[in-house]
Length: 172
Length: 183
Image (cartoon, chains in turn green, purple):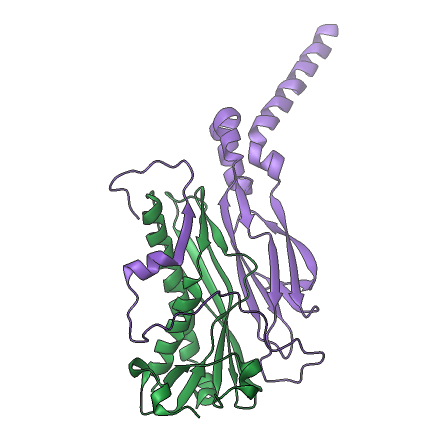
């Protein structure tokens, strides 16, 4: 198990320590969709945001969430605790018309928990949605408006996951 | 007698022209459905679209352009997979502006011909759920697409800047910027 010094100050809790691996991005394309004539491309920040959101959720459950390697290589790693692996299955945004209709965003994630031996002990998919009118913007305005929707959808998916009692049981 | 035949032909021609315009450019060119290719690794996952069974992966399904669709893939022993097929405006809507007029626009809106579906390909990597024995299990891990991971403080609240950074590469086409026009 990691020692206390392995736990970043921001995440330290008195509860059990659980590792969180880098988010696995299973999307075949970083294009989330189109809003009007604007093609919405997502950046690697999506993965980082999702990982942080999961860590925050675990911390709120009283767990100390620490960075962990991929479960498949954890057998040879110094990290011997349980590892949470989040997979971003899909992230989409679209609207029939950017001005007349709200944009709909859906995020789908899979959460797996691996035990110290690298065996999957929990796996479940969750999704979140958000919708809002985008309107006409400059480039940065589009980024902000669509980014806010996408992060809201991902947060909702993570909140659903954190509400699953089986997940709480698996990570402890 | 001859005059009567001519009148009938003229009427038919007129009806054909009306039907052509009434159908709408998007409906004529796009059709009312779009094919979406659905695959998974491993194969043999049950496909449901909008809660209706649509066969097993790999498969190609025709989906109505009129609505947003939710695709789910399920296979025992694996975490279910979900993807959303969204609508976006088809460029054929400009055909209505130039040729079809209001009638063509209304027909396209009603039939869904004015929309494109995105994405048109769903490719899922199914992950183990740890609940059932998995035959010929896929490797538990795949390549991580992410180039780097910057550990961020967990207590950090999401900011407007962070939200904006998620959509990093937006290409607004030729839409004008209207000051004060927001959501």
